[in-house]
Length: 177
Length: 328
Image (cartoon, rainbow over all chains, first blue to last red; front, side):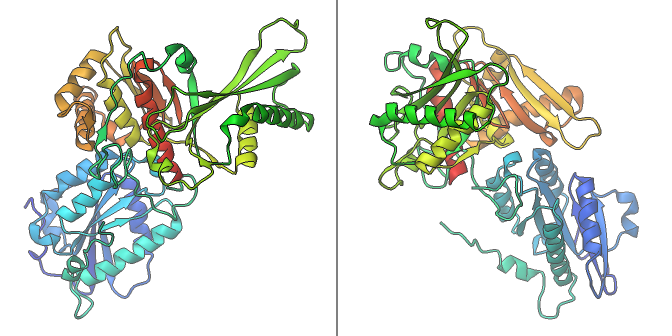
């Protein structure tokens, strides 16, 4: 089916499934490698896609997705457009804490093609956290991977007492002018 | 407000052309009020003619401490002595010909926007070759000027004894620029930084300038993109007939004299869509590095050329804004 739903399949035992969506394949590859190098006590599967919807032929082989990370490169307006179009193919119930936006390339503001306001508004409109990072540098890439693994653990239900809904309640604006 | 070339330790969320507190009508939604083209009676076009059709390299400058407008002759003398001393030390500024550098500092009253703006300051280095006769004309080898056009955001909040001229434009050899820059830094405790223009800011500029009315036939509106991460670097040049570009902008802009981020986005998206329809290339994934219109042209490494005196204040206002946001 064309729309991704969070609970239409059974969960995989002791696993967390992460889906990275964004047009920059090389960057996705690097991030997923860093994620898989993280020390953890559960299996992580990282699926990569340049856009949604995912090809329907392989749908029966695909496991249940726990967390979708939409990757937007501030150097590329095209990545923002692609992500915006992909959002239509995600069921509304995913946006209860199981989606986040990852804005990459923020170390180079002088090469910025995307307006920050637009990205923050996107996060607000879809009730999902917006993380800013710079994946070209190893330190921040590792830190970002750690953050995503922690979020994935919560979204996959491995932390008792904490569900993905907690992310939504933490979405308060920190700098209310 | 950002550390562009170094590490990404400090994240920047600066809005181009405007901060959240209103300034010249710029609200947090990113709306810009454009000043009307200057009437000829106010500004003497002869005085500012030398600014046109030259490629100026842009810098942002922090406020100058204890700069006295009345001491321009003294400053010129001191700067001349400094340059001569540096040449003595062996810092070759010009290979071959031995040149005697004369320094002239002057004020330009016409290049300002609001009441709070200071008069622009022009620095010119001219040479008289020792071989030529005494009556020969001095040749200007380097010029630079400090200015502030509607730089109220900086001027309002500056403490006493500081002069705000945040935009510095130079034309001439880089060696002279660094000499003049180091003298100013030492004398007035200020800081110079090369001004970079992001693709986002360049798209604002091309949208604004393409929409300006020009009486005579203007040159094409040109956008140059560089495509990253290819085995062979690729540059794409996209030229649009100026009347078509103006017609497109006129359909997009809702309120004359006011520009919003949404309007700039729609304008650029139309251009990208048109290009994609013909060439199947997504220009929105490439990096916009240079824009060129009949009014002015600008490059991402901070080099501008202004072609039309009528719109000089408008262009300088944008550049002043960029310089201020780089300082803060």
